[in-house]
Structures are given as C-alpha cells and as structure tokens.
Length: 68
Image (cartoon, rainbow, N blue to C red; front, side, top):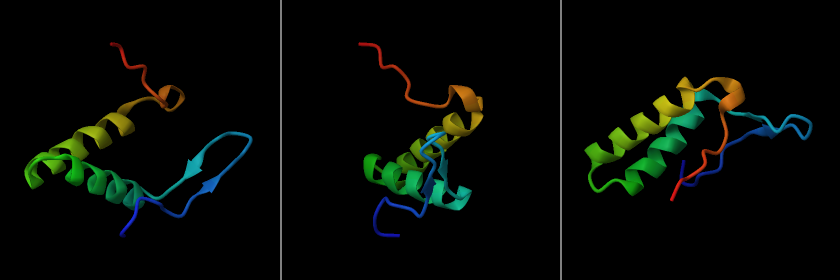
C-alpha cells in the first residue's frame, strides 16, 4: 500500500468509517515508521497509537483536545 487511503464507507448519518483491522494497522504503521527516527521507534509509536485507539470506549473516540 503506497498511500494512506484505504477502501472505506462513510455513513452520513453516523459519521462512521468501516475499515478492516488490517488496513488500520497498516496505515498507522506506515505513518509511525515515517515519523520515527528508527524502525524500532516507528513500531513503538504504532503500537502506542493503536493501543490508545482500541482501548478507548466507542463513544469517547474522537479528537483529543491538545492543551498548550
């Protein structure tokens, strides 16, 4: 997969994306590997991001507020 787009369906009424777990892991890993300084750091970033995304309750998933 060369880009960050994946096949998905967006429901206008509920704003939900349907994406496979494999696609999610692949995209998050690609982004994290580019962001990390080393391959090891990239996989650590991917692991942390996926763990955070998948551990939050469904109703609380969304953008986190960034405090400055």
